[in-house]
Length: 234
Image (cartoon, rainbow, N blue to C red):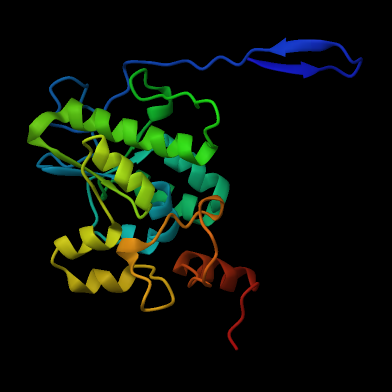
């Protein structure tokens, strides 16, 4: 509920209702609880990836590679991506709508068990990170031991909190190395200097970092800039 003033100066209350549901499905065809007719994850899935927002914003070239599969994209992540980089958002939506890729959008912001309210003094980014952890934990509990649910994040604090809460979490680099496909490492967006390692890098969102170096632009931003002619080859 918000309190605002009208043009005449009178103070009134504005009520915004947020409807929550239980019938939002997980997208796993092996699930014994959900309706699986619209399942998007692989029928032989043994692990599910849940992406942090900074991974989406900075590693979209990697995500478009077919080696990255069985991915849950949370609605809170989609909304953050839309607000921060429309080009990346559109590419992510294309992945989610591609019938050849196993990317599933889970509306965590409208599920009774995964929606979280902002706590007093909590920043929007911290609230969203907590929402991502809550949804990851829900998936872990929902699918049980038959499926491994893994949070992918380069945000050191988010990863630490996830681990403390019993959630499996890895950095992008660590996860890619575990796939045994070295060529995928070439798709990672890395810090400019060799002494700054990805496993130690923080969330790259502007509101969550101190600028200590100029980062490489992601390929998505370069491509968009070339098309709009805001970036030119020298």
